[in-house]
Length: 391
Image: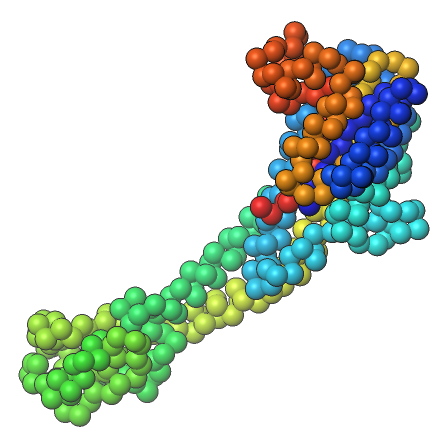
């Protein structure tokens, strides 16, 4: 599973024994794979400041997860022709050991082997400064994501609009890529070449009657130049002055004259525009994908650091000073085991908050002063990490 439970309990002897009991039961019953989650000792500051940070970190956590998902979705959209390889590009840079910082690793490995990045987020700084650094970093990534993807989306939309003109049936698609100069009588004061859409079932009728649909139709001037699944596109040359009469008579016989004027300059402009857009898209694809990969990794790493900060702040607020707690990362082995895993945790740590533990079993019990709904509150500190970022 790509789901993790990040919990903490006090670091005294009694609770370390409780953690050992939890590890024993969850391992024996194959409920979860558990690893210690190392969090540095931060400068605590005042409890009032921690309460404010708790609220701010909650909002930042939600924002970071949303940003990661949007960045991942942008990778999907950019890699439209290689969607099967998207997960290969959603990786985190390093994080296992200092000497491996340059390596790209999968997200699960990054989380299970998490190490606080002291260089990027110095633990000796006040907590508020660390949180501010993370917030500014994510805000900048979001700003750049919007501008870069917007530019690419406009380019992609313009290209798709041009490509749509080259698809569809003969009634709606552009004809500039299927006709040639030789199909038309051009620069004539008296003659004009029309394009007529004829149902496939009426080809014989067209060949038999087109010369007599009006006066002044040039004999043997029709030619089939294109077909789709339902009709064919025929040329016919006639005198300009009978154009409107020919159109009316053609329509009466279910032959539709397609309005088209052969303009060599316009056709050339359309082709050059298509080639330019294709070239621009190709040029933007590589740099944009690289930027998305790098900044997905940066945002993801920041998100896991935010989770670590939330555990630290909530543990101090819950368990008090001096700072003494143990954080553990649990990876449930299967979805069907999560209910049983929760029961084990609530049983092992029931002593931390008897009222909260009881309320989990009895939803009618209210916890005085608690703003969260009962289902969000447990006797231990708990945060959820879901790596299903494309679901």
